[in-house]
Structures are given as structure tokens and as C-alpha cells.
Length: 234
Ligand SMILES: Nc1ncnc2c1ncn2[C@@H]1O[C@H](COP(=O)(O)OP(=O)(O)OP(=O)(O)O)[C@@H](O)[C@H]1O
Image (spheres, rainbow, N blue to C red):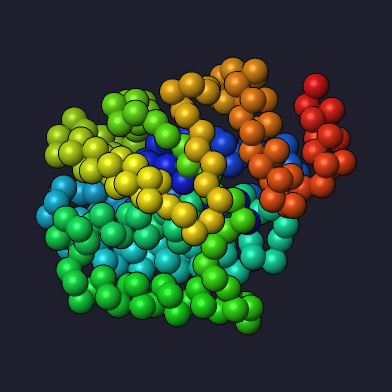
């Protein structure tokens, strides 16, 4: 499994799509706009800043955990499945809510215990909770906030709720800290300020080369398959 990590609007969904197409791998999206359960919860969570994060934060994490676990049960059986979000990214989100007093100690304990119990055994397979490769999309906070505003979701709009800018900065900071201290699995950082893999074909190829070479080095892609993929791209 390949996890793509990064702050809100870092470009995870786009990279997941591009990478999965190139690898011809299964892909799993967060796709909040088409998931009624998550969308309703998220709208409540975002509705009135800190107050609504506090009242809905814990149950939102349980909702994400349920949805993500459904994806994980499938993805774990497939080679190089790409996930644009994961239990790992949810843990960063849940922890920052807890760190800022928006999920209380007791609720956080329930969430962590449940998450660990679920991950200890996926589809009858004991699992260590790690993916084969973690890709971190490193982006400047202001750039990410700009991207959030550009996609124009009402619930994420900072004009409607100015306090959201602080929240986005906080989440950005949480991801930076997480990436700096992450060692359990192989982490590949992609600099979003350097590569525009959506609009620039050369950048896209460079990013795909970086990721796929790493997969080859990890034994997740044979040298022959990597060569074929590169030829197909030309
Ligand atoms: N565990 C979580 N806790 C709280 N909010 C979450 C969690 N996971 C995702 N979200 C929120 O759900 C929404 C997801 O939107 P979307 O699927 O477009 O992804 P994104 O994280 O913004 O990624 P990108 O734009 O990089 O693809 C964002 O507002 C995000 O902050």
C-alpha cells in the first residue's frame, strides 16, 4: 500500500489519481463530496469554528475510522494500492484536535484503542499498521490555504468563518511535525513548491520517477515493470 500524506489541499487526490493510473494500481479516494455520511459530519464539524469542532470532533474521527477501515480491508489484499488518505492521516488530524482541547482525553482514549484494535487484525490478517511507502506532500501553509479557497467548498471558506485560517495553519504545523518525526515506514517527501504535477508534464514525470524508483528499490516494482511504465509514458 502507498499512503499519500499532506495537509488539507496539499494535492493528495490529484497525485493519487496520476500515480495509480501510471502504475495501473487500485486507488482509494477520500471523496467527501460523494460520501453522504462523511459530508454531513464534516459540515457539522466545520459549521462554527472551535465550538463545532469541540462538539463533533470525536464522532467525526469515529466516522472517518469506519470509512477508512472499509477501504483498508480491500486495499490490504492488493499490490501497490494508492490511498489519498489513511488511518495514518486521520491520526494526525485526531491528535491535533486532542492537542488543542477539541477532543477530550476520554474520547481520545476510546478512539486510539478502537483504532489499534481494528488495525491489529485486518481481514483476519495480523497487520502492523504500516504501509509500504508513505509519500509526504510538503507545501507552504499560505499556498495550501489558497488552494482550499480556490476549490470553493462553502464549509471550508475562511470568509464565512475567519477562524478557519488558524485551524488550517495548525493542521499544516501538525503535518510538518509528523513528517519530521516519522520513521516507522519509508517516507518520501515531494516538494509541492518545486513540482507542479498537475499542470506541468515534465514535473509530473519527475515526481512519478521519484516514487516509482523508490518502489523498485523497496522491491514493490520489478525493474522490468518500471521500464515498461516509463516507456508507456513517453
Ligand atoms: N480525520 C479527519 N479529521 C478532520 N477532518 C478531516 C479528516 N480527514 C479529512 N478531513 C477533512 O475532510 C476534507 C477532505 O477533503 P478532500 O478529500 O478534498 O481532501 P484534502 O485532505 O483536502 O486533500 P487534497 O486536497 O490534498 O486531496 C478536508 O476538509 C479535510 O480537512
